Image (cartoon, rainbow, N blue to C red; front, side, top):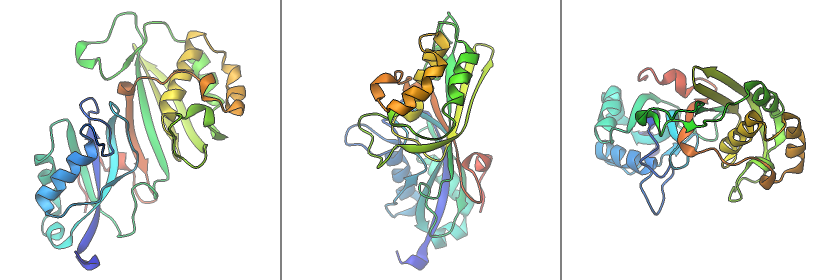
Length: 267
């Protein structure tokens, strides 16, 4: 297609990460990206180049993942609303497009994203969660001290070198990131940790959660977090929290956020 014939759009995806090998295409296993590409080809006829705001790992869920794609402009203009329903008709039930919007040609879902937000869910009770919720939380039967966790979280706010919180396979050029918010709240037996940053390193959120849980169980004093940051050694941080408790919940841009769009489609 010529440049004039292309319309760039943003699709907001919700997906259950349990059956899939993550967002990004993989040689082994089916990725959410491959499912979306297949659905777009089915209704648009042209193999798309899809780019997401974040690259979730296998088992990680999304409530509002922003993805850009280029589609046929004439077909889009005839029935923009049909794209949402058309794509969903070609997706498995565990993956849904919940919003769709036209954007300018230069928009980039990854590089234009100003802030990403994740939520982590912990089931904090001696009894296991419901069988239907087993792969939606991290079950932590030991009591957790939220005040200790919040004290540790406060040390992570702002701009730091997060080398201690990234996986060995992380390919980012540097480990400096800015955490804008790190909130911990309890509702009944569920603890929710929400974290927002300009960008995240590979396994950064899950390592932060694992480290905060160590503080909550008393294994790690919260006041040691600044020393952990300064040392930059991954071996000194906590374990990775399980993937199935993690959710990508928002991508914020100059003019909109994926969570705000998630109530319906927009032209």
